[in-house]
Amino acid sequence: MKQLLASLALTLAVVPVWAATQTVMLAIPGMTCTTCPIIVKKALSKIEGVSEVEVTFETRDAAVTFDDAKTSVQKLTKATAEVGFPSSVKR
Ligand SMILES: [Cu+2]
Image (tube, rainbow, N blue to C red; front, side, top):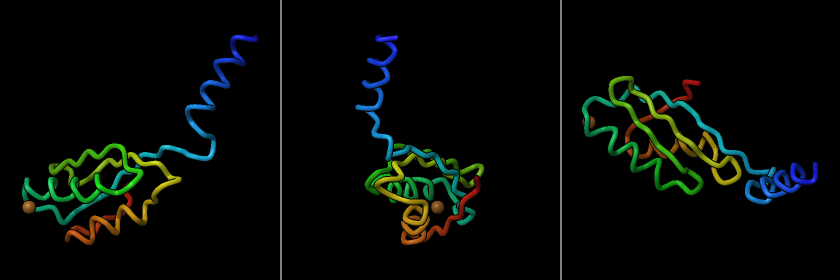
């Protein structure tokens, strides 16, 4: 039990309870060639709080992993729109 509490305390110290990592799927229908995902990925990657971006041209979507204490879905969709690719939440 002592050991369990110790490991639990360690987990809480590493990942603050108020910050949650989320992954959102964005639909980006405006991507028309294989260069588009590169532009979209670059725009999403530079947002503070975004840790992972996986843009798939074939399905016209992007999986974005971000820290919801630092950024929001609105900021993600705004960033893609600013580089010419309006996006919406797929799931
Ligand atoms: Cu293109």
